[in-house]
Image: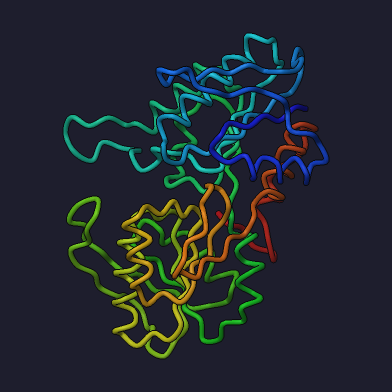
Amino acid sequence: MKIFTGTSNAPLARAMCEYIGAELGRCTVSAFPDGETFVKIEENVRGEDTYVVQSTSPPTNHHLMEMFIMMDALRRSSAQRITAVLPFYGYARQDRKDQPRVPITAKLVANLLVAAGANRILTMDLHAQQIQGFFDIPVDHLYAAPVMYDYLRELQMEDLVVVSPDVGGLKMAHAYSQVLEAGLAIVAKRRKNAMEIESMTVIGEIRGKNVLLVDDLTETAGTLTTAAKLLKRKGARRIVACVSHAILNDLGIERLRKSVIDEVVTTDTVLRSEIAGVKITTLSVAGLLGEAIKRINTNSSVTSLFEFKGGRTS
């Protein structure tokens, strides 16, 4: 087994290797003066079971291209199997034709990953689970929920209600509410555009309750902060946001600083520098991904990684 990483999230790859007890594979990833990516695998991989760790976080296109080139280099170096490890799968929100003359980019990325040489995919908390069906190769889809649950249990939040900030996240919110033995509510929203929410309504009882806002992904934090504001107005006490992938651009950071959210709990699937003025708790999924790699390598079952406290995340 040999694990290589691109430049998107090297600390996570190193933590995964530390968990597994393996050394990170040696490879050079650099750029030519015109911006083209150059990759050289610095060790023998002939007949090896290889893994390429790369989150397709911003700059998304650059990190994707870097991954394609790394996999092509491994394939041409006679690696026996190449597993693309994507802790965060970019373009996942473009998973259907919701208006005329638009692409299904999540499917295009799937095709490109296979064309570049991927024999297997390992990813976490896809925005849309049907993306697994875009591949004709095995896909292991993990969930950050077991890691999140351990931390949330330590918070000991009484009178808890799990809230989904939109209809699409209801299944995830329901799973959290079952495990945490909490109530369930939903914020029904209507989106004006990619940056703004037009209107929201709360379905469920949240007055005097502690609230856990659950989502898979946030970038501009518009949905989370607007939902939190509405929940506070409806009588919620403490509000904690639990997000698997917090990509957070400048607008998102500014919104969180001004929001009524008390704490944001997220994971290290994407590399993020320290953010002043926002209480962000970052939990590591290195152990989860590392365990999955160990099991894939030994052809063992990955199913138990979806289970916790007698329940399932899906």
